[in-house]
Length: 260
Length: 159
Image 1 (cartoon, rainbow over the protein chains, first blue to last red):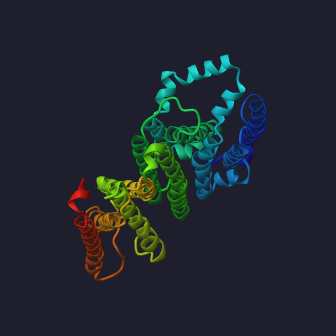
Image 2 (image 1 turned 180 degrees about the horizontal axis):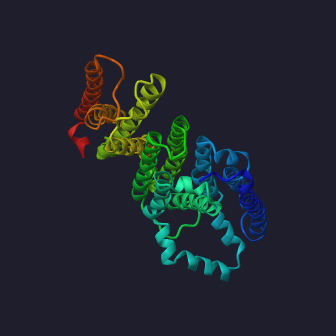
Image 3 (image 1 turned 135 degrees about the vertical axis):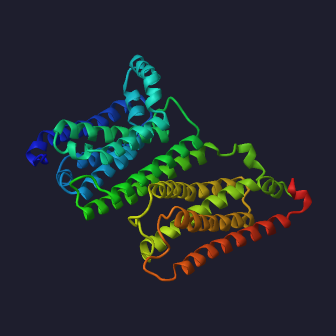
């Protein structure tokens, strides 16, 4: 089985670029509509959206994406951007909250009805989201999926859509920044976050020990180190935000503070 | 006694949690920066690590990273509630530092064989002894500080 050529990836790259452009136009447009009816939507959230979309698109389209088809370290860089950093940035832009603000009341009600469905409750459960996210990575690197996805475009697209969506799902299951319907305690989310980070580290070492088929030993080792320490950097961000939310939520009431 | 001091003594558990967690996290960070990155004595993976060792190391380090940050936030929470007590916190902090050191030295290095203190040396036993002894000294310092803090409490403060 041979790797696909760059030309074969072209339709995928163009699709990603178009979708990214649509996303980059939609958010400011939604902001414009929301600002007419509600309090001014902060421009900083728009910057988070732009950064998130651009980083996710850069992982799938353009020079880094092309390099990642043959270079394992570039591939890992792409996965860090697509599955970890971009979702974290996008959650900070609160796309669901913005969307609800642009909708009519009746449509918004329907949407919140959808969010209360059992299926949504199931996939946004921290343990389920973590399993979809980290479990998916084990499937990619511990089975032949890594080799196979480089031979079939539809499989490549499917795997990368999964990495992005599962990364986003995991982030919103841990951090309650955007609209969240089913909530779990801080301790519970902290434990799931530690487990997910732990299994991410374990997978990095397993890849270091034995990189996927067709990957040079040194390339595999550098990619695994990048996965390990790069994962740490993004997860430090997740931990700080989670702790910050806990710190704010447990703030003593005014009357408790009065005597101190 | 003012209400401020009484409140501080009412919750020693808060100081212990914050200090121990931060100590564990900081020692894991020191281990990573000094022994993995600067000295390069420790290996990321030494090709003989059993799977269980990789698993325990990954989970332990993930926990330590969380502990480092959560310990500081807990300290900030204690501080704003006027429950922070520096000597008691420092005692717990040293216990955490030493606790991680000893756990790493005995369970990670020896029982699970994740990696050794240093490779290519004849006197590995000496390195292991120094490693674990320093850990026990840190724990001892922590316990002494903690007991001191408790002894300084007057019966009325114990509340």
